Length: 151
Image (cartoon, rainbow, N blue to C red; front, side, top):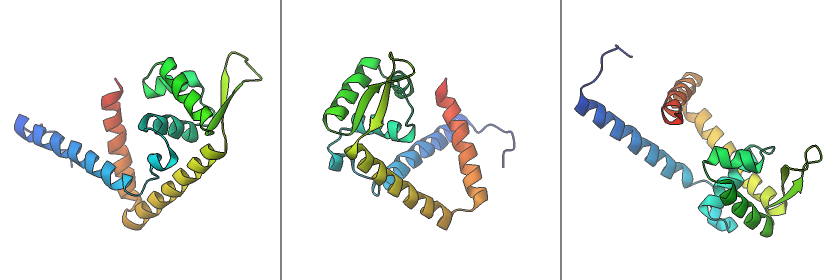
């Protein structure tokens, strides 16, 4: 319950530290069950790129660079490696020949399936232990926190 009162500086600092630690702990706990990108022969950066492509199949390399906050050249290097390793292919868009369309190939499809299995496991864990109200509250709080970092 928000009373509108601001905690003193020491309390605020301690709370922020606890929030940061909770994020780190949650990440570590969730990663225990996540597909290991090393098992797929991916670097952490390639995992991020491929994961974003899996989440948004229509994404362009330009949008990918913007969303990941890296240069288009860096994305191009990752895409070249992912293409070389059989995860995806790049083709010119039939609508606009200046734009590449990204398509998952066999290894990329296998990676996508591993991510989908993991998402189902997370879903089942959330449903088993959290009420709909709990999830709505968490979603709202995380949305607020995200806005802190977006500017």
